[in-house]
Image 1 (spheres, helix red, strand yellow):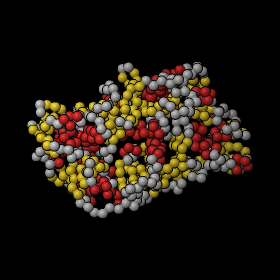
Image 2: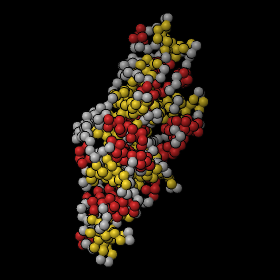
Image 3: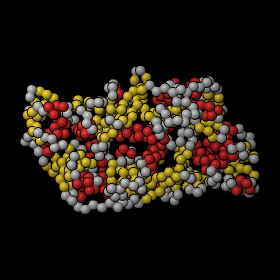
Length: 313
Length: 313
């Protein structure tokens, strides 16, 4: 099939077959082709551009399309799987709305989420041009954990609080050492704020602000983490550190939960952009411990939880 | 057992039993105790400090020992497993030399390696005071991959090089798209330097420096990665990107290797310090794809490869 380029627009004579494949846009007796469709036809031996070598075609396409490589790779992958797909600025539209991105490129989860696409799928192209797809959607996570009020005392030791063993045994706070519970500063600050815990150092009782200062010393983001921790507790979760999994928190729906059902790893992103490969890695790690990956950002409505999960398309 | 503190030194009357457990240092009729040994005896109900409450004991120990929490946790964990262990400044010495560190603290792999301990074990204490142990040792990785000389041409498209399919089929460079191999800039630069590849853009041949500039645009560390890539190729490995696993490279011993034996993930650290939890995460991820984790730094002798591997102690 002969492809013509005139006034920088590529077209073929109208073809029922191509139209059926969802390629090109009919205009008069022609099908106008997107540069990605041109390269797809050429590389797959279905067409040749009159007067241009393969190298010329590459360069013509590249100059016309931003972010050409990831778009082309996604387009080709979806075609190969038999999907019809149209290129619409920075997304490809088919069964889902695909957002192609190279693994090495930065992405803002907040900006992605704020486009409020139903069926948004992140299509990540790795350095070897292999594709993985990730469904991006907002969720409202809820647990079933409940706590009664209590009142205990604890002692600050460096950045830990040694307190009553009952906190770990009953509500899974902190960890056990002998018959004591050792809390993190985050847990301690939360319980002090709730009025369930008094923390002492050198005989005098510490204020919440003093505990927050201790937390901030090792963790500049302590206050924001505290905010999300509190929100997750209010949502009924048992909240533990997720550090070992590269995230801020891991969640359990209730104490004693052993079964691997819908629990989460949570990472606070807010306005940060992160390289796509970090998303890939986080989702992979979450999956390996049978959890779902949630990313959090904050807007005027409060904390927004964005689930990102691998899908087969 | 009564523990006395005099002139800031803690001791008990000489006890055959404690000495046999490896606790204390004999001096006259006494056993001089390290503050960590004091707390261990007190928390395990084997002793009490005359004239001090539990809270006083905590504070007395803490003030005397830097980095008290991780040291105490490691000491207690090793004791519980029946090991004799002595505290020697920043390490604990027993079956191995243990370097206790909190998951959240930064560590320089280079500084650790340069202490040249035989049997160095990183003892990582997480936020819940649980311990994992990692053997740290220098290795000389070697592969068995060999390549003959060849000469092909390629075209630069954004940050990829489209070239002959034989490069992927024969030597596993890049990836396939149709019947072409698509190389990364790193692979391209290596092959140009070796004289095996000529890269063209808009009809003119690119110099090595120009390719390196292209690489640097998306990756400020491109030149150092190129250096390590070259070293690993010289060591006989098939070298692919490790980005998806959070590392710089993944290595195969030869083309077509399918069996999960001693291959590696490689991360360049040089003089960077990284939080211990990143080491934990990297080793966990490497293990999940049946590879060993290597960290690289450079000194006057060249690239040094440090293997970090989880061990049960």
